[in-house]
Length: 113
Length: 113
Image (cartoon, rainbow over all chains, first blue to last red):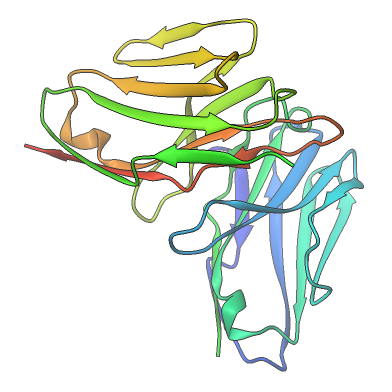
């Protein structure tokens, strides 16, 4: 275990549903990230939080809404998603943003139907 | 922003042979270059990283070289074993004014016993 836990592992949702992905890290890290991994595409950074403050947002559609209530927890709220949003969503944490090893969670496999 | 190109996209080698994966990047401000290994159905995990003040780094059968002038870096795996089979991602960053690591598209390495 790397100390980064994501739930649920698998999620199937309709386009009109609202769901949330959860990430928890037990490593005492200061930065947390959401990445999207689609087939045959590079890992795409969605959001970066440093010390619970959002420091980067890579033009992600508003149907994805992150929340970081404390340095150990990160959520990704989903609503009115599209089929093309189906992907593996990976959470990661690092000691500080950008310049140190990122520890990934096992991901949530999301399917939008 | 940063752009990372990774080649080849797939690579097959005989067990015991060497494997080389190459990446180029565009942002000269990038100063951290990690390599991640992702086995099928598992999370990406850091295998080696290099920072801009070092030209080469080695860890047992794995080595990474960095040429900042040419903006390219490479992963070398010697004496490959079947358990080296996985997808390998390079990354570069963070660039100027960003906290982001930009990932390459990945190389699927198959080691044939």
